[in-house]
Length: 301
Image 1 (cartoon, rainbow, N blue to C red):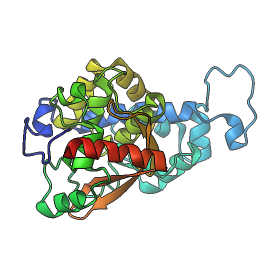
Image 2: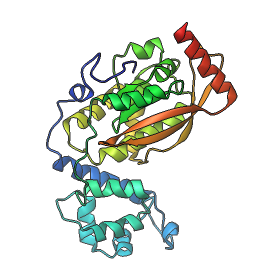
Image 3: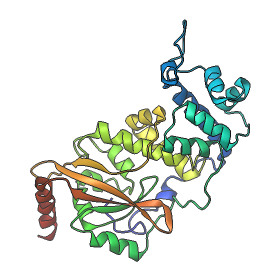
Image 4: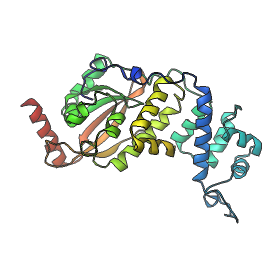
């Protein structure tokens, strides 16, 4: 995570995760089935104005209840949830999404898994940025800034970001992917303080992007390898939660700092790289600002 460009240092992120089955369609259907079952289980009859009834064995709605509330046939919905190769219109998926109370990010995830209304021209596997983008994030120094793609591969960083993550155990991984780093280093070396709060959100954000790339070799191999390397990641991945990227206040630690560093993160889209984003951090309070300055003086001195 300490290189300026993805063209420097180790092999590019896509090559690291290569080797999975290139056929995507047959993988999307099981993923769609698991997603629908997971979302159905979290919606109770009370959520949709139905009486709970007796002898209910499922924690959420039954399949026939989802079908009834969505205005579709029970057999058709059952086949959809079983991952059978049936066609679904946007109108029907809209109805199912409303019944399952999906938010915007989850709804988009559902559409991509069902292969409906997918936006063309995605470029989530970009492995480098041009000098203009590098110049922008360099100009943000002393505020940390980084360019990620939707798989959290690190495409470019500025000096302040490298200050924040200049932890020997992290540098030693040789992997330019922030998720891989945070899930595989020891908890003591992890720069993110509230791991149990922040890491589930990051995995849910990854899951939202995954729906557009199910079956792609780099994505499938990345998920499989990180699941094997980190039982905690595997547990979060199985939850099926989906979330969009957004502004947050994150707390970091650094061995050269005398205390926690609280930073507000803002995610900005990048023209020409539709699935990449600049994430910039600003100190959330004066103490954090002073501690960031300590890291900068250490670098310059």
